[in-house]
Length: 285
Ligand code: ADE
Image (cartoon, rainbow, N blue to C red; front, top):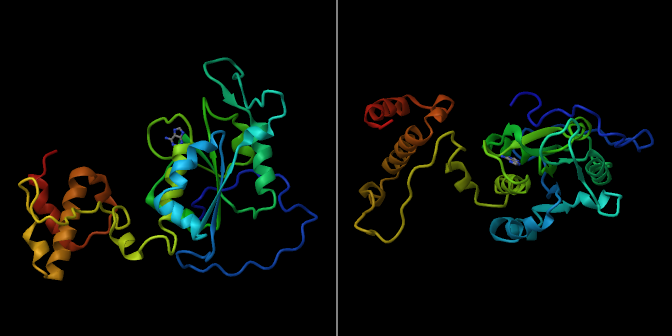
């Protein structure tokens, strides 16, 4: 992703650290290991609807990661920063037009209150359909950060000055429009958390879709026959090398069929290419 994969901080985060801040210890050398931080990863999520996170954060792998202190998710409702009686956070757009625009001051104040003392390189990511497309590569990059802040937009979006003042990157989870950034934030927390050391079995991460640049092939388990369908005999052969080769071929077959664009960048062996040549004429468009 080049030198600044998580986006550069275009404007300084006001006076974080400030002149009066104590001198910081020299930065330890960057370790090129996948996860330079060994402790907990902290997520600060800025949202007007914190209740939306209750289910995803309290179930399954994310729940376990939280209980085991591998991640910490802190929700911040920036409506609390609004000063008027109705705690207003939006207003009509200058220049006219439909919908409401989220005002800059309450959000910027909330982010500064939470991250004002944080290191300057904490990514502050705005979730919006106009962002860069989130991917497995970006999930891996975020997983190397000890702390990440996510901002969930709504309505017509934010006053543009939010981008200049606090946002370091902008991500979209796909080419469609959600009612707000909360679901996108949950997708990102989920995709990143499962990559953190100790969250799930490292062996299963290596074989899954997108890690290898290909889609994963089919899996089978008991019963041996179901709905008139059996299991490919090779999986019952006990011949590990042949099984591995079959799995690779099936991954290539599925990728060619569903996501041929991935084959342009996936690392392929000469044998992969030969197999793809065999498959191509027979795969319907
Ligand atoms: N907010 C609304 N739509 C979104 C999307 N596709 N990705 C991220 N945030 C969003």
